[in-house]
Image (cartoon, rainbow, N blue to C red; front, side, top):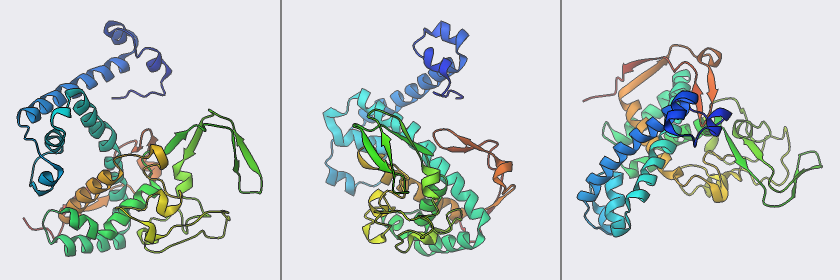
Length: 320
């Protein structure tokens, strides 16, 4: 929907009765209808999963082939699989994760179409690892360059593009000029990830799509010294992408610390699987490459204003 929390009238009328919302706040009414439709679909899926529930241990599920994520959760939780909790879990996956992954796939496609050398390199890796079949989790771990492409996409087009934090106590932060900035307890701090991820003191060629940057350690460019920063070390990468630990908070594509996205590894897994299967089958060519023509819209993620017009053709490597 077109509903945005930034619209003050929407916030004021969120608790209004349905009849009033239909007249005074049509976007709120549309938002409610959308949520009702989502809940109806989720309830039907949850009912089906509960009817087919077969209690299983984590070891049993690891050996299971096929099935949905919802069925896995229902079978693992047993009697603890309440309908309300399941609905919250599924709503989080549908609303929170689908948009961020879709944004990453959009901008990864855009950058690969603009950079044929990188596209060819990642296609060769996909072909060598998969050979035309669907990826497994072990394949995802071996698709290292493809995961660098996704990481580099998140660096340049972060989803979300900003994070909000409030200090629990008064504190002073260095401003890079041997001075400090005082933050009062409870003040709102907006962290602009696009600026952080393109900081010229941290990243060499910060405005260039360059997946190979994640191959080697780096500790600043020297253009703007960052005292105390530990730099990026690939030896500190423990999952599917460089977390805030590996980059010492220079890259926070999924946030960091206590409020970091709990689905970060799942999102990387999902994006890697989907992008690898797309690249196996299709080649992409942009109709428009200029971002001013495409247009950017900042919300929960970075959207295109007019869509990403693309010419799609079947890849020469693809066989049925």
